[in-house]
Length: 465
Image 1 (cartoon, rainbow, N blue to C red):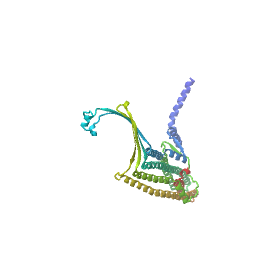
Image 2: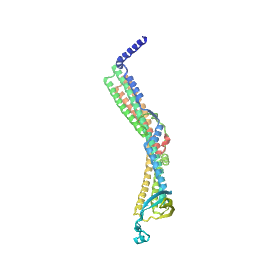
Image 3: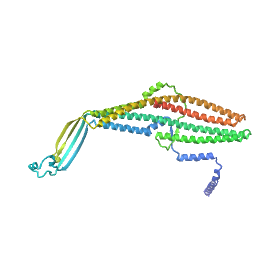
Image 4: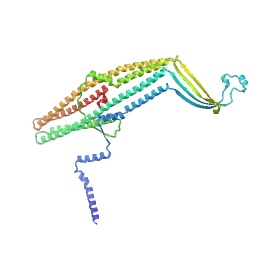
């Protein structure tokens, strides 16, 4: 009986809660309710979190970036091509087994009918007979300057592919570094908008308090409400740019988009030592892989020209075969043939000379490109040094501007609170603070980006990270 009474009380309690729950929702704080729902949704279907430092992001890009993986395959293809060229210089051995039943028209070989009758044959076509032949053949190029130079050119092609892969790897490192810095800039922009919104909330409260005290007007309150809505609008734009920057970073990393990136590094100023232009250019000429790659392209073009020109020179090869042949497998006898082939090119309708002219033009093109690559390296180093120097000064100016803007805001707010100034002064100071925050973020971004660009220009991108 006691048990039944307890069950009835529990049921009545559940019934009362069910009836009162909808009305209780109206008395719950909206913010707390929203946080509870968001927490439930996140625990149920939130994407996995991926925490990345700048170093981790660059390492992930090296392992997963599409361009890096494609260049690795290009190296494999170039190596395979070199193996093919080497195979033309090595012995080529093949074999076959042939069994056939055939007839032969002897008249086709110049044997007239009268001679065939003397051999006891009544017609020129023989009776069917079988031939079995099992044979191995060997071809060995003893000397061919064209093939030798072609193989050397293929090996140079492997070196070119490897250096191009290294260029791409370093470019990916620099690109991911810049995208990471852009994502940090977007994060700082969101934080700046949050600070602007918080400042607007404080100033709006101040304006309302001053109006209640009869010192400020409704226009002052409205003006601050307009500024608050403007800051909310800028917050939405910053949040969109933040998500876009993360998507671009994920794409460069080559990982799945179904992750939530958390960047662990910060956008900050790191003092750097001033660098002389001539010293930076000297380092760049020694370290930039693009220059080494272009030198190997020149070597590749020269070897290709030598290979084509080598077709003019006679070549020597060894040919041989060994096998068993007979009308029956059990009656087959061993036979062989060995010989040297001395090939002398005489005339091919001008095709060889056309290929020589074409490859000679490629050699000249690579020489022109070498000058262009060298000038590009010089330009990148000089621009990076100029940008680094300018951005370093911009950071200092932005910090000073932020300090003065905050001081202006303090004076304007104190004057407005004391009834000595208008709300226009406060609004102007608020705008100055927001602009100073943006200038500071942009200066830090330019400084860190210029460090990455200078390291890439000097060929020392790996040392930076």
